[in-house]
Image 1 (cartoon, helix red, strand yellow):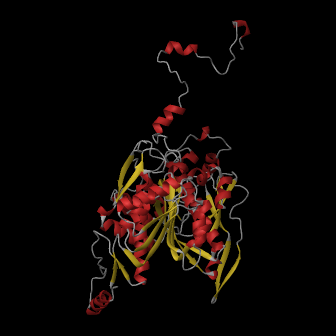
Image 2: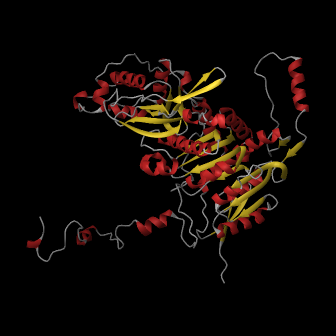
Image 3: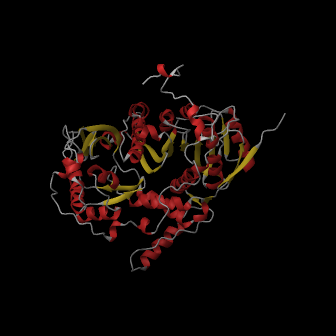
Length: 563
């Protein structure tokens, strides 16, 4: 019997055996996802294990020094620092070693086990890692890769249904400290089990690659999976993040649990969220006021949020009531068009900036640890600069397109908002995105001022178009487009790698793994096989006339030909 060919793939500290046939799914472009996950879990372990009296040691990482920002120092400060140093935990946890007080990690859909092997080799402070997959071939490959990398003392392969495995581990003493879900497509069917199987204050890591559904191509499908209607809008990538956070919080609320987002990133064809899960009936009551409906104008793209509930502090108690609304009329005040309604979405901050800063400091201080350190440094730097209390965003090209004028530069538009007294930032989810607390009325006033300096041919505008209605109103302010220094964020000034660059040709979602294998993963081969319109192509232009036209039936004589 002929032995199957295998390929060794090296990523991070791991070396993984892969069958040449497409039996087990693998996407090399997701290295950034796996690197970021290792970085996040490391900082999560550092914080959690410090409470258990364990110090995490990362290879290549220098001792962290806390520098006082004040110019004056005194003996009292020095004594406090020495005292804190004396109280450091005596137990240390290093990579590749089992820690008795460490984290219990589950990767529910492990495929080859690459991510789990990397956890075992690169993340310190682990007690155990369970790499599960429903495919028997994938589970066998996980076991082989575990032996191949010498991490059998930490990593166990499992061949179970991921949901059933998590449901069986719902007991308080059996829950996992970290659960990672990275399915091919939607994670919706696993979320209910995941929010129950993660420990108190545990970390839940979820990837969604069904961006077409979450970005508005199929709002009814999005509702059936996540309990939220997606809409087609320029802010669809951030809205996708807020949809999955809404879904997680809603499912956790059934079991008197709630989520606390640590980091949420949108990267082209997928999104990745990291949340902590807690239990508390009082905090769960806040859930309704954290969700919001989105009213999006189909004409000019203005949007408004309507909270689902209200909460108000009444002395030592919190008073809850239904929200009042809607925030819009039957028609848009700016262009006269109708609104479409989407959501509910998570309307609270999607990042914990303090935690993100810890991850950023660790990655930038140890750049050789990950192959995508520059990319992580860039995107986390942008995250720390985002306005955390402003959901969704506008794009300058969409605003310009609405009134048919040329587009102001990103810095010019940001400067105009700053001159008008509003906060503004960019977004990691879109290169031309602008997040601001300015209302739509102010934004359109600024665009009207820009149009006066860069006039359009109004006689060519239709009277029913959004542009005609918007430009028919005089601006109530005089915008200043002089570029300000604070309009350009530090990550942009430093020319960091803030957005995904094409790592290879046709680098998007790969073909789903087949249990039978034998199918080429090369998308070019697939295109040649299925997308050629003519199987027997000809290079002679004169011969093209011999091909029958599909629009007309073949007839026997010219007199019968259709006209």
